Amino acid sequence: MARTGRRPGNQDTREAILDAARKAFAERGFDGASIRQIATGAGVDPALVHHYFGAKDQLFLATMNAPIDPGQLLPQVFEPGLDGVGERLVRMFLSVWDSPAGTPVVALVRSAMQHDWSARMLREFLVSQVLRRATRTLDLDPAEAPTRASLVASQMIGMAMLRYILKLEPLASMPPEEIVRNVAPTIQRYLADPLP
Image (tube, rainbow, N blue to C red; front, side, top):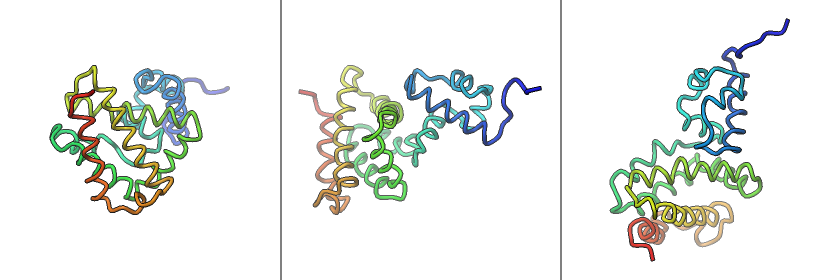
């Protein structure tokens, strides 16, 4: 007789949870997907999802094979406040992309350019893990925050595309500090100056 009920905790269970989570996040987005729905989709108890992955943020990062946890890096960028945030953000961004963690990030962005699922997941990652955190921590006006955040994201992703994927010179070989000097004032303006 076939066994019924919940799966025991093993590698197959972990993979089933990840598969269900990828589907839920892609279909419903980060906010719309719940641990309970993901557990149901995987055929496990919600406690097992927490056992393997902890909070929903960690599960989301695992579905993307994210090489970094923004929750560990972004507080040092945003918590000191608006003064100097452009410089801190550009410097941290370059340090991640120039580190060994940058290789999987490049792969993720390339994949997002070719596959709808990857693009949706990258968008959810930016909104739920980066932009929302910046909005909250910097106490941006909620009516202006989406515009400010998307302007910052356009500048940062554009810089990453040209430097790390297309390798456009002289940006591709420019020293990080020179990039910080040139790009940080624009990021600062997007976040702190009055919008036109």
